[in-house]
Image 1 (cartoon, rainbow, N blue to C red):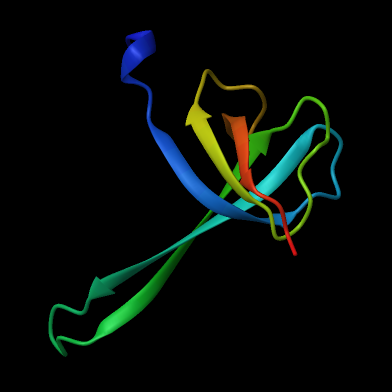
Image 2 (image 1 turned 90 degrees about the vertical axis):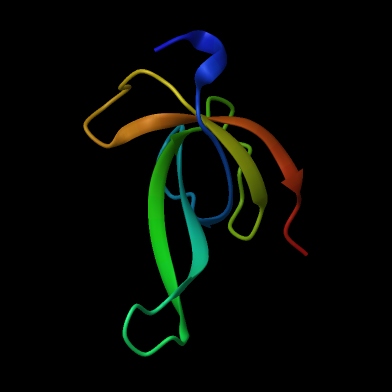
Amino acid sequence: MERNRRKVRLGIVTGDGMDKTAVVMIERQVKHPVYKRYVKRRKKYAIHDEENQCRVGDKVRFMETRPLSKRKRWRLLEIVERAK
């Protein structure tokens, strides 16, 4: 994969208990194929946070990278907004 074609996502930190790792959740709304109502779909990502600067509730931007561990394939780019 080319370095400039990496996927970038925006999500909210839901867990920061691990060392150099944070869990980020992305919530999106999808139209149900049969009932035509919008339903929420959630996906969780384990991201690499080198300085342990993420806190629960922060809005963060993160980017695809090589596998860093069993579940970590993303790394923190920036904290967009701090938790209130």
